[in-house]
Length: 217
Image 1 (cartoon, rainbow, N blue to C red):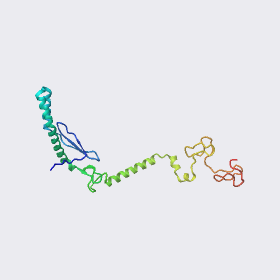
Image 2: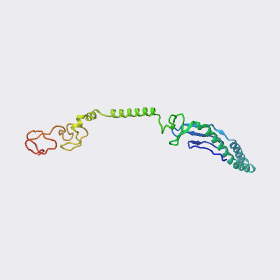
Image 3: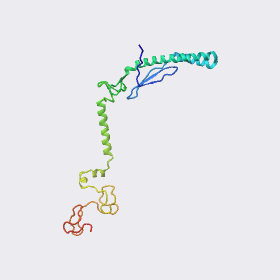
Image 4: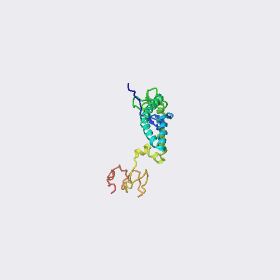
């Protein structure tokens, strides 16, 4: 029966010709474990043959070429064995989420009560605390940035009266709620009256309801 090597995506291979080393990390927080470096006897032998080849050439060079071909197959087998051993050693430190298929560390990112990773099933106490803190910060910004004149404009009286965006006389834009136009000096607020009889005029009236005088005429 062919032996299958189980592998995951949450690892890095740090192996070299001199030995084997692997890192397994959490898909959620990035933390994890690194195996201790395991020296390779094949790497040491190959290094010695390479040194001899560079110094003497000839017969030693041919021997080094032969050792390289042998090392390739032997090193791959040793590498597979080292990887299987490392995966078995650290597999208990991780769990695979059945919902999102992420590999997460059991220590910080696994919700044991729910059987899911904390991305799929967050700790409710933590989420509640974070939500409360976020709402508090929003309230602080909403109130600390509001000037006193803006607070006055938000009062019910101002909303009922209405705030003009431009002067009714010269139509200059008004940056804020003012009583007189900064351009022509016209009074912004106040009830309009007939210039002839002094009677109060209704908003938008074209003629005085008392004497019939044309408004603005």
